[in-house]
Image (tube, rainbow, N blue to C red):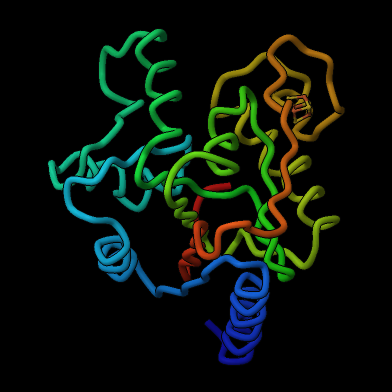
Length: 213
Ligand code: SF4
């Protein structure tokens, strides 16, 4: 990458981590998957209970397989053959997990997390329940402010996610959001986390890579 672009990105990451601190959240920056796993190791105790939210980032970084290694008590919502009732139970168990791991749809330079969710199972434990929430975000999730976050998620991330999920919604044909009333609509909960009541309950790890949508 061009050195000047690198310089710009570093400044943006530092601004964001500084803002997260002001909002009672801890911020970290790692350069690659190995550093990410090493950091997760220091943040999560062995055998502790770990749940996850839907995240392409966690899959692409190998974190789901890592959680399956036996080192942690993993609430595995992706386990093969799991019934929808069992999955629902896991969603409830996530609230009392030691750690809830997820990505975010956008992270602002003001240290805010912006997410859109379908049934709330991903955003609800971010808000309340788990002792700690660890957010893993690729550098592509950084945006200036909430306005940019909404544009990014509604017009980019959500249509791509609807396509991935094979949803019969207007965006999967048009390639952009029309704020549909479809029964298959995946955009139902619009959640902004501006600040934490319990200091550092939420930890945000920014990875120097393009991850997820
Ligand atoms: S509101 Fe509807 S059209 Fe817009 S991104 Fe969500 S599912 Fe697609």
